[in-house]
Length: 324
Image (cartoon, rainbow, N blue to C red; front, top):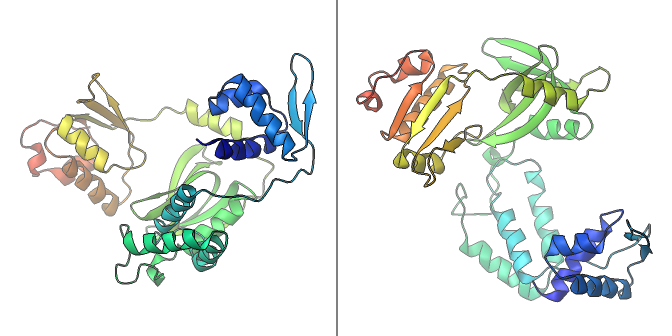
């Protein structure tokens, strides 16, 4: 990293902290004590109001209302930001409707030469799911599920929500403390803690028809996380993977699944998971994924629903599967 880039980053690092020390600067940026001291002195000389504190726990802090100089991106930083931005096209992401406005503002911050480079990159690079005829076209199918943006706005204020979901032929409402929103297989999902039944729940965002604040006293997040760790998961899927199955697993696997390698060379692994199959679509998806892993696989435990769905498949010609 060049000196001017390092100083620029250090300035923003210390501006976001109420207090810092030379040792912290050394550790964070992997530089010597003398270099850290010189950089801090140069930052002071540039007009950043630093106040030194003496004593054993001494260090520096930035005076209130300090203003940093205008941000200047390097050519590589601009390219990295722009490519990451391009990769979000046709991804049904929240706030995607602001793309044109964001693009104009990014281009307005940089030089003409940098603009020319980005225009060339835009012509050269295509990402999965991009409309090759018109990469900048935002089709109706690319827009995010309307409930997603509404949920994000609600979560910025309060994590506890009354969530109404359409399930099979009925509609149910749950008091939920939202843990995560995540995107998997081109669909958005919510993971939350049911405040009434005190257990983890998952909801496809597409199934939600209404969300509103949960009218209850403030929820203790620490207690919720503690309850989640105390609840033992029922492991009902156990797979032993060979090298070919591991290679397939790396190509694609459900977000919540992970493997533990069973030798130092990472050529064998075991997967243990708790799965709940609520409908035929989920059942088919899981079964197809198991087939995708291939024959270099030993299944030692599997739910009966999945087993019955898979009976007759070539996956099972070479092994006995214990029913559970």
